[in-house]
Length: 219
Image (tube, rainbow, N blue to C red):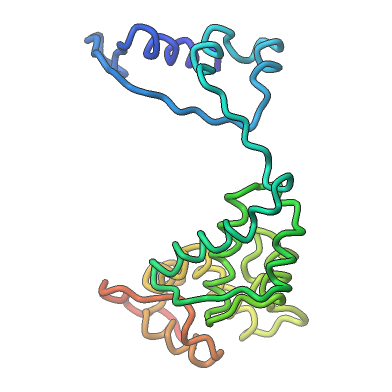
């Protein structure tokens, strides 16, 4: 709100502040890099953003167009994000031309972060050396709030299929971390591993050296 903006302005101009619950003034020397997805000039005109704070922040404004307006960067971004995933131990992955075309054609309302999250979700749910078009298509159709659908689980729901959805969704939420997923599900890591092997997904996720949680249920 406006009140918090006034406090930030004071920090930037006077280089001082007080901690919550304290009357002791502290000095600080910082450099600020601020980002926004709103038109701050319009926010100033509407009275929702302080004009003096706007001019204090807008020393060197850099406008970054949305990803949908710079689709030519998608292949480079995809390679960069996959390299980060390789550093996490996800293995070497290539992208089919059709899959890359699907990524380039998407409008990306969530911009670069949406692309990064989608690639991580795909690599968790579809381990293997290649990102295929059907992997990308399923993830795009499912959206960020339905990782189970992104895994391609469709049709009538059996108990085993529902269990598979829950397991894959937990793995997606924990970025492939088996120990954390098992803790959320209330099962032992060994049980989770056995389930993945039964579904032919033994390469999905990774374990840590943390001790497994006591098993509460298994099939």
